[in-house]
Length: 349
Image (cartoon, rainbow, N blue to C red; front, side):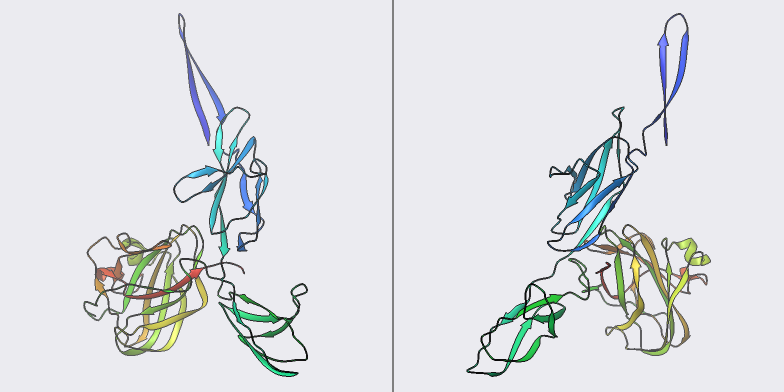
């Protein structure tokens, strides 16, 4: 973007001059050597394509604050965040103009250490060791080489002398604080079915990190059928729900037996549905065939806009019920999704 300014000099006549100054873009592009790390690990923030002096900043949850550790004024800055954190670079060009880079989000996977139980026996022979923790448990006899002996909470082995074993856990769900794979429940009692065979709403990711939805539990009345879960990657609206613009079938679930209202019928995605950081994604379902109908709550706000539910990571908006996107989804409006989500932070552990 170009900044245009005028300089007026008053003498016996008016002179107008136009100058062009690059006031944006000198901050370059920020990235990280690893954007998903384990607790106690570090990562290096990298800035390229910049012009000027650098000041890295961290978002403390309220404001952006200058980093003061060694390297915080260089284009390769190593950080050790203890929790999910956001960073950016502020660059001051030779003319004194400041600009900020894109934001880099670092996800930190926090896993509690496992708990092991000591065991003893008299003489040579078999022994059973136990440990508990989050994720996959692995046993070792050497803390340096960490050559694995066994996987599982219970380890049956044999000893000939006093022996020390070590145990570790790996969180195979790769979930972080906040999401943690725990269901997000939308409360209330259903209003009516009205023969509604579709229901749509928006999911807004406010966490600063990509979120993956693994399972949606729908409150469907008793019935059987095939159901397509549809998404609108840029968000549902009254207009595109009616026209179908941008809506795609994400996955079709066949031969579903709905459990009835207040029980929850799960649809677990073969490939988890990713909601990128900062994105708004529309979700709806379409009964392709069969007798499944949707239980819902009657809304009182603006479809696809008004907040129905909010936590630290996401917002669920009020939506619509009726036909599928492109087939008159606005038939009953507004309506609220009723059910549960199972979501977690998406990362590459």
